[in-house]
Length: 132
Image (cartoon, rainbow, N blue to C red):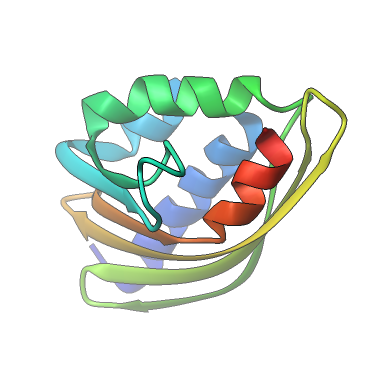
């Protein structure tokens, strides 16, 4: 795939993420894909390395914590070869009424029109504080 096609797939992924569409998010990923989030898993349960299958319940749990969508504002993206790097900002309202705003740097690796790897760098302590 071209860099533009790869970036388009990532934009599609982020659009599904915004809507909390777990099935559609996972459809953009290869069966052998992994998703890593920075942080200590014993302090932030979303942290660590997970397979695509392990991400389904994680994403379902995440989206139940919000009233409505988790808006993802794409600040920039850079693509080269099989990789796309994204800088984004999220905004949402939790079910307890708190405002959740976080910054992200995400590195995506792609193969044959599917995401094979997500590496997500974010502020896990903000997430713990707001989603508690």
